[in-house]
Image 1 (cartoon, helix red, strand yellow):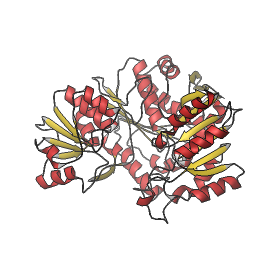
Image 2 (cartoon, helix red, strand yellow):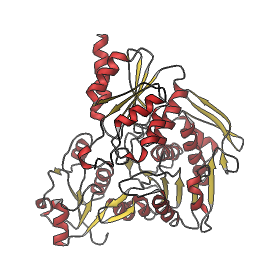
Image 3 (cartoon, helix red, strand yellow):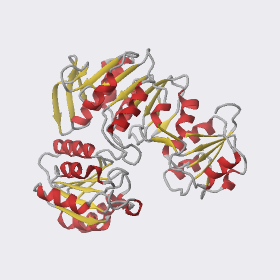
Image 4 (tube, helix red, strand yellow):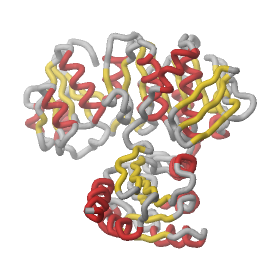
Length: 466
């Protein structure tokens, strides 16, 4: 893949990781081109600033210059004109995770953070702890840490920190992305069923994570959530050291003297006090994973605490988007029942005496399906009032597979909580504008834009106060 390559074309260049890698390679002297179906800020602006033009739409002529390597994005499949041209002309091609492995990870010390939940937060916190300790790490994260303002960068540091996604690599490589990341240190936050579009059951996900564990070398380490029953079968290994973290007795890295407060958590690990400016038990576990890894890598408690205390969070993870008329609007990426439940629990700690509204868009490939029909009702019922939007891309699912919003509403109402199905962002915005009161908190759950509900609600509430 890396022999005699001078020119590289990225099909699907507007993805955050694709664009970041393309820019880094251009800075190293490679000839870089790229294409995508649609280009819009911030990635279009980023690529323009890097001097990389975006060709649109996808078409065979975008490859007329016969690049030495074509990197095919995860979203592309058979039928795409550039994919078909690559296969017909037998052009050299590969996936983005393969490119990352060969160009950015080899020769470095790789820390790969995986798990069904919390990997963006944990990898962001890990990168900042290493950064604040002066280690200048490379990182690739599926979110935007506020301390950095970007989701990826590549440096000459020996350290690279990667968010390890279990989703498949490309249409021609159905292995999880994290199998390409050469982990020296592997972190597994937790393991649950997810990605129902590519995994048939929990056992299939466990198999994929087992393959990841098998890649950790004997001079590396596996850090695993010792509280998670679904992980236990993966930890019966002796080819590398294992360190368990968690809140239960028996874990090597565990928290004592825990104080969960509205602005963060205080706790001790082996008698050393720590505090982290993130609320909830979920973020306490994320911090324990970071502390365990950072200690293993030689960072002092003082250096670790310096990073923890100055961490500013991540966009779209309990992100406060606005305060309008004393109403707080929060954006969260949560789309799995467990993530939603734990986020609501954390918001209860942060806002203990305030009414909590939740607006939920079933948009991910799993929540669009009915595999979590009952679990979603249980999680959403933890809020005070719930508004449900239409299932995204209904036409792509058979009726027997779809989440049933009306049943979801009925189940939540049976739990004693007011819940309505309002279809789209405009209807939800109107309802909240009419019914949300001062001191209320509105958390908007979606792994997409939710038709810009956050901005619409802020504007509508502002107009009401004018």
